[in-house]
Length: 531
Image (cartoon, rainbow, N blue to C red; front, side):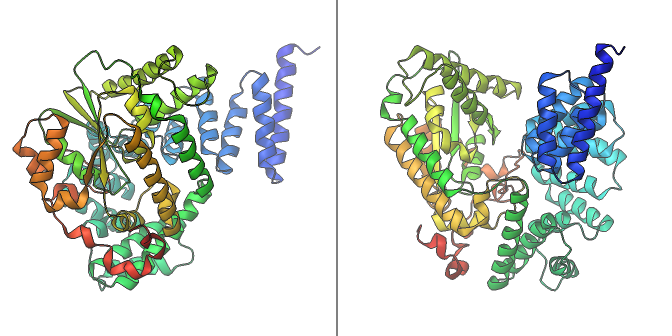
């Protein structure tokens, strides 16, 4: 007679066999459901969790793949390969904190694996743990210098640190190892655009013309060639390559299940406005019981937020956190708690349950802040997309400074359309979607400006770069900060910068980018109406 353990093992084997059959016959979703349902009522099986992760990954369900891998790692905590795979998956969906933690485990368990060190370095940069990038950089240079991927990572670290000569040299070494590396080509061209006749440009053009070039590579090559032809003032060719790059980027995003929905965006704005009426701010929670004042720099991406952060962080009383994603987790936790408590409709700060939920959300933010060692008189959080969460930010931090950066809509949208982002919001890749999203942003910001007290400080990029001293003085005065000459020479402030504006932020304030979009104006119909 078979015992319970044998019966369970036989049942597990039968489910595994059936799931494999379904997968081979093209019914992967049914296979995933079968495995998930079985795991929901039985002891977890290592083989079953691994198969579930594989199937979810093949379906493009990266979040589901990550969830299966995390559960699998409770059974196989010493498997460095699984930790590395989890890091890669988390990086793919932009969960860089989780990716960094997973890669850190992988490097501890398998210190000789170069891919793990590369992942750890990349996720350290993306999660803005800049100090944590030095150890993997040293390991990469010592162990992995013959790998193009390692030279790319080294280039990225040097670029973020502001050592552009070393960055260009590292990207050059990557190209010497892998001449068709689209990522190396793009980074070389971004930092120092060659002439259209350069052999490297011909190599990029050959990759672009090759029908077998993968979309992820076509993105890099398209943006690289766009940079070359824009620098050469061959605007028609530049625009064509930017279009090709964005179309390829949209296909990459689609393959990951990420698409832009105008209807969903409008619904999100409508619901946010309804959740935060004027009355929501009538009775704020108590300010922090210690000396720390938050500064949130918000606006559309590419609207001058990096420049403003650079100016503020040059002040000795201000500590820069970079583009922190903490408010995203706070918002999700806060809304979950409201739902669990049965709270619906507009936020009522007079409700004790609401106030406790807000305090708890703030504690989540502060825990993450102090985990990064960010503690000063003023701490600057420069995540442009925080404009979407200004209601929660004002409720969590009643005395926070909010700086709203504005820039000419055409300049903002064109800068986004020509920026080569990795994991990003899908509206960037279409001029029509850019125009739609920008109007939604305007609608939401109009609401915040009407209801938030104190009102956000508004700073216009064009005004700042044309009269820097006057507007920097005004910004510091409104922020309650004493004047400091270092803010006027913020380009001399050496700190890591991981945004697309890394190079501009290290230059003396200039005005040439104000009109960059104008040679392309005739081709920008969808966003022209925003002007």
